[in-house]
Each structure stands twice: as C-alpha cells, then as structure tokens.
Image (cartoon, rainbow, N blue to C red):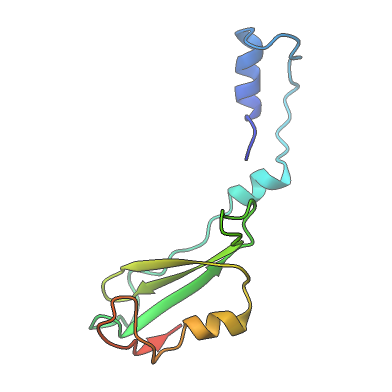
Length: 123
C-alpha cells in the first residue's frame, strides 16, 4: 500500500482533478512507511576475496519479513537461497521466522532444490 508524494498531490490540485483537495504546504517530512520503503540492503558482493568454484559449494541465505499483508497461504516471511557460483536464487514462503524452522531448511547436507547433490556450505 502507499500514498502519493507531495509532488503528486500538488499536481492533482493544480489540474483540479479532485474536488475539495486543498493545496498542500511544502512538507518534506517522510512518513515511517516511506522511510522503510526507501531502505536498501547491500547485495551479496560480486567481487570478493573468495568465490565458490563449483555449483552448490556455497549457498547464501536470508530471511525477510514480517510482510504485511500476509500471503494467501498466511505466510509473513520468505527465505532466499543463492548459489554463490551460479547466482541462481530459490525463494520459499515461511509462516514464521524462527531459527528452528530455518535450520531445518538450511541443512548443509540436505539435497538442494535441484536434487543433484548436497550443498557444501551455507551462510
């Protein structure tokens, strides 16, 4: 969900597109949702001192959430897995972000989504 920027509201007033909409004062304050939506995380570095030399040698993982609104299945979180070598990413929905649940998913010895061979390391 979201809302128009002050610039967008000003355009509606100038074009008289909404009856009764007052002219907005210049207000450069951001609401908490605007601040949150503009936050960005650094991606996994492409140039590191060490990179995997084979598929599934190293899997990066991250959990994101809580997300509002929840998914149709009631999930509020999701977990991603990225193969360091191929950069292929898998994403799975989660109901909760408990470490117990994620440890079951991030079992380094478990078969990976491709079902070809086990993951060597996870971080």
